[in-house]
Structure formats: C-alpha cells, structure tokens
Image (cartoon, rainbow, N blue to C red; front, side, top):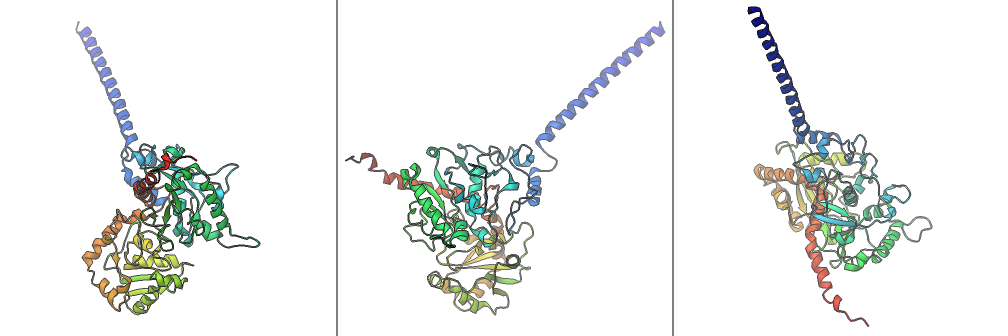
Length: 488
C-alpha cells in the first residue's frame, strides 16, 4: 500500500514538473517575442544619434564640387530605417501627398538642353530627367564660384525627389502633374550655369548658346496655356546670377524671379513685392561641431576677396567703391585682416579658416549689393558686418538679421575710426548673444540633397508660398473685365 502511494506521489511530482517546465518555456518564448517587437520599433541607440552618425559620415557634396560615392540610396527598400521609418517625423521620412504639402508645384518638362544637359548629363532616349533616387549617379554641378548660384540645381532635384513616395525629404513642396492643381508653375531653366558656361560667342556662331536658349525659352513659355492664363504671373523663374537671363528678363517680367538681389534689375521688372531673394550657396566649409570662443578669436574683423571691382561704373552707384576705401582705412589695424584673395588654389579653405577664427566678418557691397561672403560668414559662425545700403536679404520677413548681424551704413563705415571703434565696443556678452543666434539660424542657409527640414530649399519654397496671395491678387485684378469683353 505504501509502495503504491509512493508511486502515485512520484507521478504527481513529475506531472507538476512537466507543467512547470512547459509554462516556463511558454513565458520564455512570449518574452522573446515581446522583446523582438519592441526592438523593431526602437533602438538601444536613439534615432537622432543614428541620424547624425549617418549624416556626418555620408555627404552628397563637397565644397570643391560634388562626390556621391559611398552614399546609400535613400529611396530604395533597403535604405536605412532611420531615413524611412519614423513616427515622429512621418512627413519627412515617408514623403507626402498634395494635401499635406505647403506648396503644389507644376514643373514644365523642358528639354534637357535647358537644365541637366547644361551640366553634361545625357539620359537615355526620350529621358528628360535623371533618376534622382540614385545618389551615386546624380549629375554634378560645377564647383568653385559657380557653386554659389546653384539654387536652380537644388530646387529642381527636390521637386524630382517628390515623385518618389518614400523620398527622405520634408513635406514642403510637391510636384503635381496637372497644372490646374498647382499653386505655382516652375520653369526649370538653369540660367546661371547657362550664363557662366555659354554666354560667349564661339567660332562662327552669330549668337551665344545662352542667348539662343533664352530666345527659345521665351517662345516656349508664350506658347503654353499656363502662361497665357496668367501672363506668367504664377510662374517661378530662376535667375540667381546677376547677369543671367539678361536678354529675356524684360519679356518675362510678369513672372516671379528667384534672385540674389535687385542690383541689376529695373524696379518694374524685379521688386520685393513679387520676387524672392535666395541665399548664395556658401563656398567655405560649414562649422559643424567646434566653434572658437570669443577669447580664441584673435582677429577683430576679417575680409578677404576682390578689393578693386571689375565693374567700376556700376560700383560707383552701388557702393562698390567702398571696398577700396575700407582697405585704405583698415589695412594697418593690427587686429584686422583686410586683404586681397582669390578663390584659386587653397584660397577658399584659407578664407574659411580665417573666418572661423574672427569675431566679425565684413560683408561689403561689390559689383552688386550682395555677395556669397555673407553666407560664408554665417556658416563659419562669424558675426557678419553688413555694409551695403541697397542689400535685400533672404527670408527677412521671418528672420530678424539684427539678432545675429551688425549693419553699418556705407557713409558711416568710411569715416576714419568709426568701424573699428564700433566693433571693439561690442562686448563679450553681446557678441555671444549674436553668436548663439547664428548657430540657431545657420541651417537655414544650407543647400543639400535630399533636403532637410528648415534648410535653404525648404525656406525658399515657403518664401514662394508667402508670395502667393500677392500673385493671386494680381491675377484676379487682371481678370476683372476679361469675362465680359464683347467679341467683335
């Protein structure tokens, strides 16, 4: 009897252990499953840190031209999850549709000779646009000083990227393929590179290639129903180089222009009411991490560039002669660097190093009221000193430049001792306040592809959107009596 009880007890014990082990295995599998689910949506390394790691180690451009080697295809299914999967930044990571976008843009499918063909790109038969989803094979824009007017390149790439549903870009502007749905009509003519490369007459040519393209553009636009509908008032045309579109600008004057400044335009053709001022692309390297402190910046004021301007007649009327006068006043000041410098050789890198070690960087009117020196100073985190009475500044309706720049009238700057005394009178606390603000706004002046939230591309699209109410007002006024005209 006792033996039977013992066997029964042993059987119960084994059954209990079996259930216990089974439960443990179930709980173990359940825990692993839960852990895997959580790790798929979050990482032990914060996503922001991963983003910085990727961005700092892969760059689409360099300041001497562009290199796309070893850059992942951010549009492919195998792209890093940090670029394509994010609940917090869904609009940036997963593209957007026309309902989400701030601006709906219709872009003409102009022949390649007007845009990427000017960069030497040749597509396949009947291919108008390059495949912008493959960062390793993007057409490159000319380097050096050509780069400063490359806004046409960045905006066109950004619009093309919006055709890809998983493009890693902000939901600011989106390309639509029906002009009736568009807020603005985009004209993808690379006018700056056309002027820089093709404005001279060669051989037996009667007119330059640049002039020929301008003539063809005017004819094309005037034949389009979109242009006829508004006389071009809702069209955006890029003419960032001061001499670009020199022949066509008067015939296209109703359109919105994207410009560097208004220095070489009559007010009836270009003005701040209808047109957009876009920043130059800086040519010095941006300060990404360490920036010298107030005490470490031994140079009070820095200027390196052309001193005697090439267009003397224009300079007289645009304060351009002030560079020569300031050179005379400042060249012997011990804590001021004011020297001639050319962009050739390592001149650009030396300029960047000098700006990064200076408290103030002088931005002085030259052939035109603006120059890329302002934007070189901003990304160098060197407080700009703007000496240009006629300058118009990008995004000034949303940015208060007085928070991070010093403005000096030309008539004051040429008074002996005025400028150095003014700058020496700005104490550490005031300089630090401007320097801190500089760090906050510098990203607004960065051109890049793919674009990022708040960068120069996004800021330009938003500036265009802010002009739309004025555009619509002009169109509606023009239409007041058109509906009731009596046909003869």
